[in-house]
Image (cartoon, rainbow, N blue to C red; front, side, top):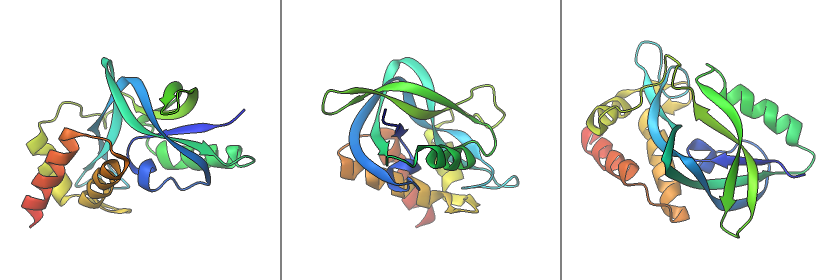
Length: 176
């Protein structure tokens, strides 16, 4: 059986593992938002950044990419993803059904936010998000770079995300 991973943020443009197939995909019951404070990759404990997470919402859907892991690399890929995504345990690893653009329904490893974790910050006003993203920096680089790369990749894929578009424009204004 094939192993799939659902990407909605940095996995879109930096999966970090060997991908055998990419498909546009939709996950029901979740929405993408900057609802996790980043204390390592895109921020620090002194100046937390923001990264995307999937918030549970029965009325929502999230469009992204389903990435089929190269055969024979499943265990190594899962080890890599756990090291990358579960560094502070703010994400929960789930195996969720995603609808592929070719009509298939597959189960995909998906990282969703733990709303009880202290890094969860759902519902921040967009202006506050923009101010944080414009200034934060972590070991993987500036927070704005994460936003720009994700927004650009979504556009390339033909995926519309009005909040990310607004944030990208506003952060560009802030940092000049």
